[in-house]
Image (cartoon, rainbow, N blue to C red):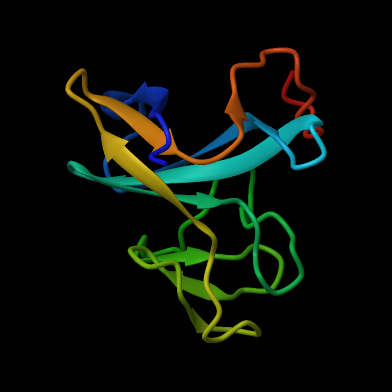
Length: 135
């Protein structure tokens, strides 16, 4: 079964060569709806989306709120352990989780220039508490 697209923002909402965090609502297997922290990267019309979790110790990646890229902007960098990840594949290329990968999320740009995700359990829920003080 193909999952329906879930629009999260317009392409223009993410600056070129930047990553932007989002906290979405996702229904878990037990039926509970909870926060799902992710981030989306954009280079021109190429976009990638990953869960905001380092595979080393399951911590958020951003080294400063909303900052995911290393100083050169060529790798995703874990702010907790310094691990570096490939921008395209999410594979760890240096650090304590070498060879592991970030959890990628299927992403596309639709005809309206919206960035859409295809992931199980996504729900429209503005009342979910992200747990990150963003409400």
